Image 1 (cartoon, rainbow, N blue to C red):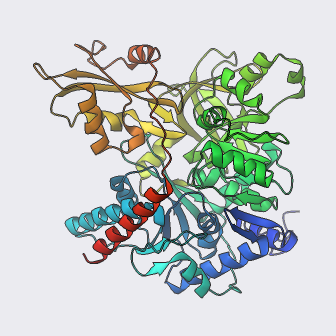
Image 2: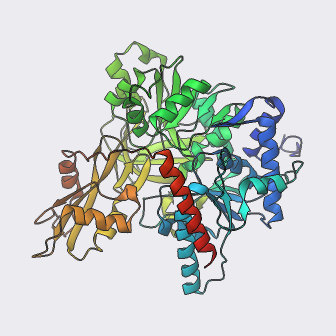
Length: 578
């Protein structure tokens, strides 16, 4: 048997790019992407991706070049998930909630060759590019500035530009008969995603074609997604490439319903208008759906499947959202695992349990997806597995082909993450007798706010920049909308008179908005161990008794939007003269 050949007929490198070609052939006339008044078929999406890949090659994009994009859930970002790797490049979808400084850091670290910017984010991108240029000049670095392409509104163009290139014009110039060069190495990179909080500096997580392909198939099977789903993009595509459903919807010949923002009105309208069957989201979206005003809410004509992850959803919240007609499946993952790694796979024997018992079961993180070879909870010091009793805690570890290739330009962090044949997640949990894993704490003190990871260390670093702050500790506190939010405990210098509002304003100047503490508590002394280490477990217990204030959400009136667009144009013109 060992002499049987391995050849082109029986071995093809695994890549999710094959899903697009199949969808174009089998579901050619079925709607692929819907966004406001724009609708494409799978034949058209395939052609547009070919055109864009061709255009990227004409701009001298070659193998392993990084192409960055800052955009919400729009057709262009969806198309780039195929077109960029079709051109041999690596897609870097940037978190739209980041500030200019962090965006500049990502652009510099990734050495992005092209930077696609949605018109809405031109102001922050302009600031990021200025910071990047200053950084490169100061370091006398050989790296060059990326070529900038603005993605205008495909439905109602605004005319906003930052440079000469525009997305639709670039697509129109490409060759619709572009032929994808065959991928020979399935371990070659397909995407680069940056963590947003596990350390003070984001780390670049590299995905392979093989890992993305296998993770996509696992989630389709684990979630039970049938053919021709109608998928609502309530989860940002920059989140682990939309938990790989950017490729997965194509694999099922489905329809992508794109929305720019996850407001109750937009989501309910999309569900009602297009017959949405599936959506992914962090638990905070449950609150948005539940708190919808009467005129925003629409009755569900059929159940909508939701895959949720991020902060563990409380059982009571699961119970409330399912009463509206949504069916929830809980997953657990992280950037390094190519999205979800565990799914709370439902067992039929649980159907006879009470509603409260079902919700408690669904709140667990679950069992491994099919492409993980194994998952365990171990004592990191001894590498011994904890007892499967739902009580003894350890660190959650994973191994399998869907785990990242490693951290870009960071061999030390990669070797620390991969130890003894396992990937160490940094999350503390237990294993129940039935094999289902449940998170109990976070060893790195990560705060998960609306599905975003916030590093307490980074927030503390910003607090320490204030001249009146002597000691600072940041922990998670409950938030009625975002699940968790940062709470800061501070010791001030003697005779200092800083107030809570002043500290929060200081943080707003030094951090992205979502990382700013919602509550600041002043203490004479922070609790410490005998060695002087702050005892955060005590502060967490106090913070759990607080509840963050909810900021009033305001809708922008049409006339304000038009004014903002004119202002953006003026700002762009000003930058072009620099």
